[in-house]
Image 1 (spheres, rainbow, N blue to C red):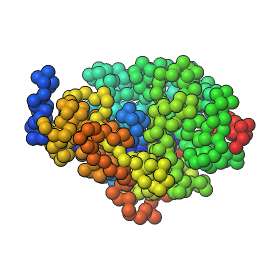
Image 2: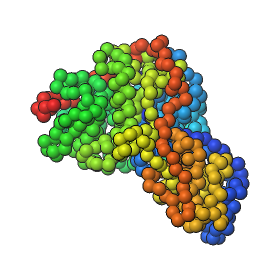
Image 3: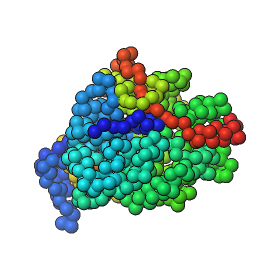
Image 4: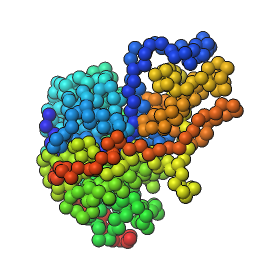
Length: 537
């Protein structure tokens, strides 16, 4: 199905994410776990498993913290085979991917990887899906149901920048979302695991600075966004916003320092209403979007940034490899440490970075800008720790030392899930579980959580704290607090930066030369420019 990208008006999105390991545990229980069989009869024994796939995700924040994802578009010259794309994502540690289509080849290749995938309903399909329940059911069957459960599809993005780039479909946008939702419900209550949303350009925001006074464009606020927010809240979904930091910065470059766009030190701008100081453009847009939603009586809908990145080539003198590396590196750390909203400290704002490969073949115009983290030959354009591991460096010593980390069971994980992960870690995972056998130094307390923590950490440390080795399908999380107690000693090590396997290769000079994204000018920039002139830098 052709993706209508001519009028997207925003960049796509990409992630730097967390690693995946796919495994199929054999039936039976590893000898090191036999001690668990002696537990109270009230506890369930480990289930026999014919084939279990656990997506192991490295979270460098709390278990429920924000993630950073990556977008993947297919309008690329010499596009690698889908299975090679999946291998690259896995080597990077990516576990959240936003697709701009619902390519059957891609979705098939992602089967068994555990990667959480957003698929897209193109703009030109909105009318038929909105008008016909049968058309919605057919699209869902062909583009989603056909790949479940092996491919982990978690969301459907209905339309791309429809309000600002394809307004003819605006009145049908929410009806199309409702129609697909009904189809998910009828397909077996899949609405509980697959969410419906729509991607919007940040140009729908008016008065983006000061953020506390931002509001949505009145042309479609009441007619489209109000019912959409009601729908998102009722279905436990999220608002997807795409932004182009360089394009926004360029509208006020004469009075705004580049550091403000790159998350680098600067004195910032103060919101006179809240007295909050904004030292980067990303936070200002996030809070502006939150304020605009609040103005429509919705503080109950999460905000997800569906597109944020920096071009490394293009007409702009600021489209350089150096600045792209600075922006994306700082963005990863900023998001993973939950610092994206001065208005709501600690708020988790999931974000997709734009983009895996530079799409040089898509329709539209973008000044020849290239965004890809990788060339089509799978070599990195620049070095980027997409997992965010290096943000754990302990700067307090001032000598570049690395913080010690341990991997432990996540609070709230069920005993059933923990036992399954524990069985794998001590079996196929080859963790050293001798200490949690009866009589071992870490046998007491005899609980699933305690034994799982020890096994998870053993696996984590034995794999040199590799990218994607501390999650166990959401059952584990990292901690900087030593979990050792009495004579039970947890091994430790220093977190190392994880770079994709091909990162030592030299970037190709023959990379595509014309990415064709566009970012339409809007009133947002005029207001932003005026605001910065008033607050001064």
